[in-house]
Length: 356
Image (cartoon, rainbow, N blue to C red):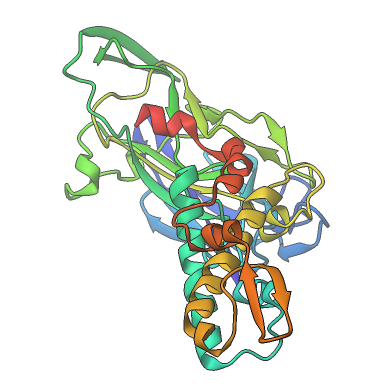
């Protein structure tokens, strides 16, 4: 089953401070967590929100349906005041494949494959998915990702000072002329951001205490995904994978840690969403897996009469046949077939490829 994490931090004058109470509850008191598409409750109002440390709370929602967007209601009480927040999260199980072995077997017409044939198809699926991921530059299957940014160090370039103001804080920071207010994530489309941290001495998370709760940024307050589309259920989607911020993002390598959910659900990969359609990715992965499986099976069974290409002609007397050479060449070529490259072009994350 799928899951997701929800973290809340609370600061008073820049110091992490415990709350009077925090539970899952929307402002109407009807639900704690519910499905965005059907409205069915997944957790009731009043469900406890566990405390990790002073001012830091994290709830893990489990037993959910992968690829479904859920709405989380949070009720916070502090200083005699009650606050309500609603956030959306995509449930993932990190196991959604681009294409399955059963789909490849069905395309090959193998209803009762042998153990050897099943192994060949399983390997073909792995190779085909790997080829698709390598070409577009990311894994398109819906899952939660963790990345460090920026990937390059821009500090060697011309620097200047800039004041950054967030809420009631002002900080003078030296940045390079290449600093921007856009952060390009690798995996697209972005469905939700669970956590985003900015630690100027983060060192890719190798320093003890790096990317602690006090370095976490708030979506909508400190940054926001460049939402530019909606899926079939009406949930916001960031198709280009860009996060924008007030001020500028750091230019020192790996000082930002992003934990986010991105990719396409199984239904979206197979044309089940009328708005967000990633069918070309699935079709290419299927065709490439079938081609790889046929190549291996043809080589294994060729001596038994299984041809390695399409028959071009056949004669009965002193039986003989000729094979069409182009089909053989297509079957035997490595990488992604040329006719499939065009179908994948719209899904390449060129922003990440050029910016990393």
